[in-house]
Length: 362
Ligand code: SF4
Image (tube, rainbow, N blue to C red; front, side, top):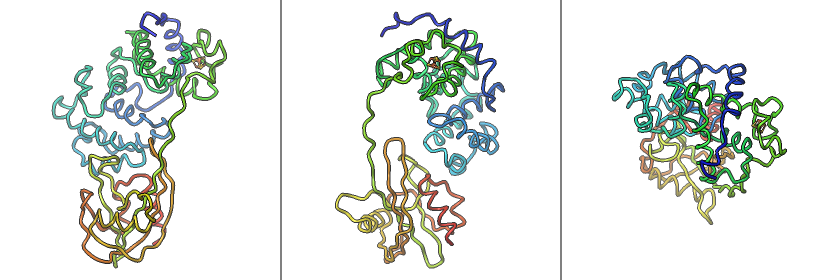
């Protein structure tokens, strides 16, 4: 596929934009033209559906109404507001980027590609979305929805995971995005992908481009977009210790900023190694992480959780310290907290299920 293969875009973009102007979703960040709100919404919507992100968005805006409020906030408070949305690096990066916007651009989110791409966590997608929707600049967004719509519309038979296919589609939409309506074009693509050209059973009868869509005409909507088989997702067995002291306080540890789920709090523990029992793994992990030995180990709860690239089965045990004073050897901080205080700290989802149970079982 080369750029010479790109068909004319009018047949696609004209009915698409007309349809959007009548049918667009009523979303709180739309139409007000507030670049901070648009940016926040685009960051939250990466890997997250609109209906899931919406309550978080509204709470976040209430907590940090302007980019100055966000820039001046403590990371802890940003992570608490982000908790439950997952992919926490998005929240941390947004916070860092907000500080840069305030310090270097006087609180105005840059309106040009080079500057906005320098902000932490702002990739091609977010840059194109903010520049087009907030500033009406003709940068086309390409995400999973756009890849699906365009691969069907053009009848692309190749695997959409291939970089060459993604580049081709990027070239097509960059060519087709109208200079006079880039915000509507991109948002129309988002709405079409989310509501009409859905992954399974697209509603082609309601689609504004049904008459020129190859997949619709050739009855291939169930095989396009073509994807080769995904690799098997790895699974890890995890143990964590809920260490309780004589005053019924619990020990929690803060994850380093540089790792996955960085800056969040958790119960100490880690991966079970081959040929290790759960109890052996727990004792080893607690010794490595805190420098203490434990006793009175009792099973508390077992749960399963899926991250984007792996799955875990997490076994939680309650226990007591047998020997030593705990130190933050592999975390950045540790704290003894009451069960009620667990709600004041941001936890990853799997650990949050444990804190909820702990607060119910006083
Ligand atoms: S006609 Fe159907 S397959 Fe083609 S773009 Fe529209 S919804 Fe998707």
